[in-house]
Image 1: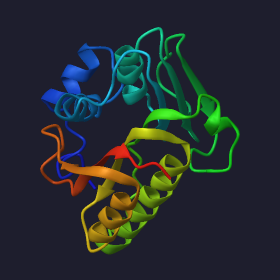
Image 2: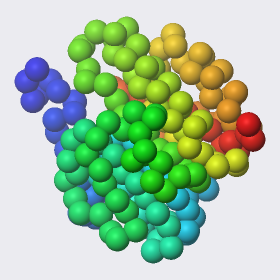
Image 3: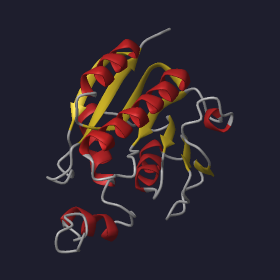
Length: 200
């Protein structure tokens, strides 16, 4: 796809603002909006960031939880930024629910997942892969969150969305669907937010 035809190639105002603020990606503004709308992050919290690269969400969350908080960031790819002392990065499989590394700071108050599959151009295939990533991230959250904790997971809108929402509601008392302003108009991504993790 040529640069002229690729809507993701040209920097927009969110991309420019992120760079100016020291974040590697525009996705930081999506988390900022979610945080503002559901009061997600507070000082002293323990946060798990699944699929953290290039690092914008980890940087933002680290700042919000402050020096008294703890953040574990994990991704198969390295981060593009250095994280503050309250955050730890591990280059590993973020979806290995049985990994001891995932549970370093568990139980967590918040689990974040901005993960998306490598897209193929086939809408149904990409949606199915996104659903699988969402469900695996939800499984990690269900295992490692405190009672009352929160989960944010990205998913591509498609026929699996109702099933994803149904599964999330099994674990959380409240649900929010948020499509942040920073989402590109051509994108089908949506964030499902689970609040008030139910006591098992």
